[in-house]
Length: 319
Length: 248
Image (cartoon, rainbow over all chains, first blue to last red; front, side, top):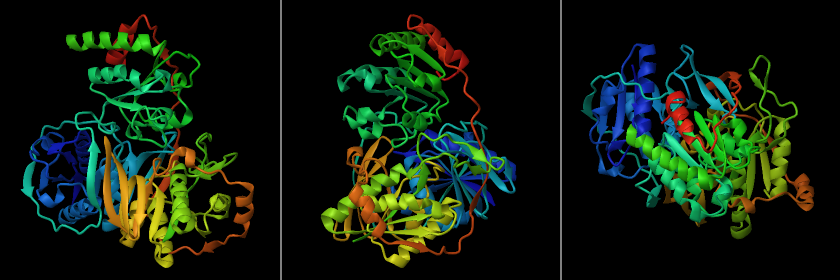
């Protein structure tokens, strides 16, 4: 018996979400009085996982797994779960993990709870709290199957260092067949993604045009943040659809969300409300976002943002 | 091509979210129900296949009789037939099992479901249908073309998108981008009249376990008032974010 965690990597390096789900898996394993095994695919150096509570790493190295394929990856994780006799499997909320986990659930005949925000309140029955109603409520949910899959909401549990060491073991599962083939990938590799970001800087129609996004990007650079935008901005083609956050766009669950020139339509707020701290900068003091935000500046973004960038640069230089 | 579009019957985005029966049930009192937005993008793309490629389009929902107006709306938009699996939708896995049975019984080539519903946000039904019926699966799909039995799909990934080639039978987890928002259709009077004549079949549910069950709901604690900082005192904002919120 053990807790298995799928620690996702990109170009051989663990994603931040991988370390967070490792921390979560450790918390579950402590409750069940068992150990944590991680399965990682073409990850390179896996020593970092020990720091976050992993006892053993199953290393899968295979050129056939170079491109992500949900069906094949899910089948690798299924085999790892069966080998380890895993009672609980923990995955992140990345696009890839959310893609493969339902297939894994079918493969393991496991109940699957998504968007989980806390360690289980009980392991018998196995009870977790999750975001529901697009962040307008929490659902306390019970997983009834022998094997359970928990999808942890990004930035909900955080990183917990335990300072241990993980042993590593090569694992060579059978590789499944798939008729889904990646033909091309269009991805900005030098930018922080919204899914991985601690901080997201987001612009709305108040910025008046795509030519004014320089300051949004500069502010994001200073903070090491990802850039995002509201729905009208992506509909107008000012920014790519992949930056659209909100109910029908990407969900945001960052530690800090900075909204510039976004009024805060209910659909937008629904998509970003899982962020812990929200700052709004808007000329209109009546904008609905001020009711949802923790901190606000009533003012013109074109004067506030450049000033904020200068002050943040000075602040960062002091740190 | 036979297309099945899975329709979730969800509270409109602007609905007040409240719970009854000791916080164990969603309070439907005064709530307007709509087609789940992610499903509506899929339905609209399916209409394109129907009109341009002669596909036959069925919509399906798992739920009680109260969800039929939502299916009728999909028929009014243009679907050819509707199926309601007559059982209470309790959790994602059991809903996926009900839908997988419909897919197998009906021999559908293409199944389009929204990437997640805006109420329970499970996000697992499309993938589970694919797993249960051994079909190909593309999630977070923002573009889809079908030519004979081959398909090209665009998937939104973290930080960009990728193009994949695959084949039917195929399950899609759809979202905005499958069609533009401006392409979404409002049923017209003729469509509403025609929808009354279209078949809405009530199907008996398959046997299914409840892999997960809802225990209770909680609402977030009320949020404190926003702290306003003057634009002339942005050092204070940095100070608050650093020392109070501890996020920078």
